Length: 108
Length: 115
Figure (cartoon, rainbow over the protein chains, first blue to last red):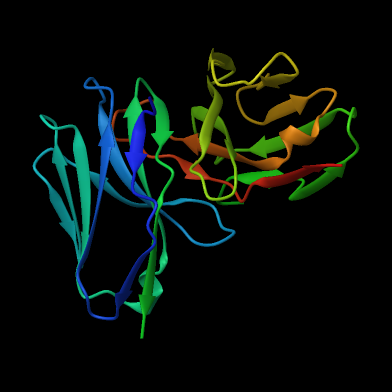
């Protein structure tokens, strides 16, 4: 069983739409959680950390549900520049485990 | 430089040759990671170091793969007797410390093609 599972998508949405991604993780002892963004042919870059109480950064909101072992990312008012692959990341004992990524295409 | 630097950016090698991939982490970063990423997949863990000590090498696919970080800074991932299935993007990342909420910063990767 993979450590982190994500729906690969793609999610095709119009500009201005709200879109949500979920991912699940298998290890209940996982310590910390992140969303990374990866543009085509580029390296992954941190989008935001995910805290237990949930957190928001502008148009992006991340939630963590430890009981159900899932993490979500909500993007409001999608922009063309949000088109990318979003990687769900779980950290256990100083090792980062990545999901396979969810591809988002925002269209005009 | 300010970021994680990997070299070479592209490497084409013949099957059976050995290759060495280099990673220069962000200055002062304690932890250094090696990942392999196939097209359409997320990065897959290979190994990581804290300072010069290799903490975990459970992700290395077989004994043809090895890594070192002798002075706790630059790291080399070596693949011996390369095979076509070794073709992938190899990514290095570094992290400032071992803290729970400390994120990893990635380099641009080395695209390895074994022909």
